[in-house]
Amino acid sequence: MTRLFLKAGSDTLGSIQTRILKTFELIRESFPIDHQFNVIMRLLSDQTQTLNTKVKIAVLQYLSKLIFLMDSSDFTFDRPNNHDIQTALVKIVSWTADIKSSDLRKISQDTIVDLYNLNSNEMTQYLNQLRKT
Image 1 (spheres, rainbow, N blue to C red):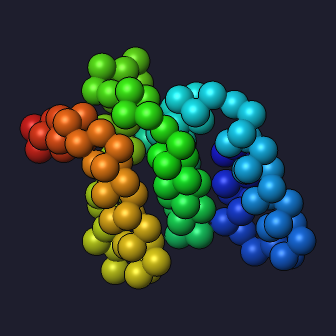
Image 2 (tube, helix red, strand yellow; image 1 turned 90 degrees about the horizontal axis):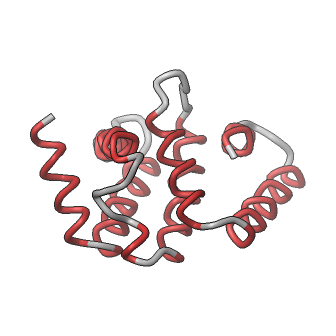
């Protein structure tokens, strides 16, 4: 998935972009949602990945579509990858104040709201934990 996101965020032909989007749809339908969520959280929390604005937007767009398919039980505070989720949330929250891209600000804000709507209690716990770190 990481390579697909990097490819989606690069300047490619429209036909390639269409194939990438179809591949994302196939992944979304074929693999467990919680595994996809974990992969995205790991990608966002990975300090070795330098994501450009287009890649960040592509990841958040995919995440928003994924959140729509998730159950509230898929997003809980007591997860093995809790640190990845916290680190990813810090990044997403920081992108809400991005001065270079209004698109990134908007999709970041929408993603935070989508996560809150998915499971408000868990999201509140995550946000409270962020204040302590």
